Length: 168
Image 1 (tube, helix red, strand yellow):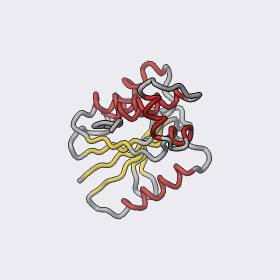
Image 2 (cartoon, rainbow, N blue to C red):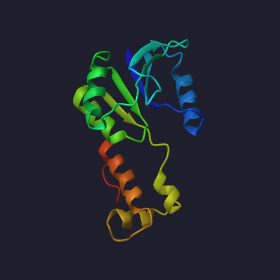
Image 3 (cartoon, rainbow, N blue to C red):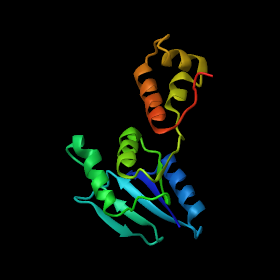
């Protein structure tokens, strides 16, 4: 059996991401070979807790971890108590602090698979999809009002995914 751990960030209000989560979970709800788990970061609780929800999904409620310099160590240690590293464990990431999460997962769960879902290309918003400008910014040939954000997005992408060549 595969165990799919879906990283989530607590949201007080619904968003487009909420729709994505609902659709995603409904797709896998009745697949018997996959057990769903949800890791909810920044959940408004005082301490870490694990519970099985009414829909049968195991939820990890993870509060804001301070000081943040120990984030990887604390989160990795907590998750290791509940998740056995194996090739049957799959982590699905789509959260903004992905580099930190992937680094932690690679350290504490080296046998597991990591999938990074890209459903929001922020650079496309700032550049209106202009791929040539994107390439020039990445090569430091062109400045843009949002160059720092665009390069941060690229760094997150490259740190999480195997990428042959974005410049082809």
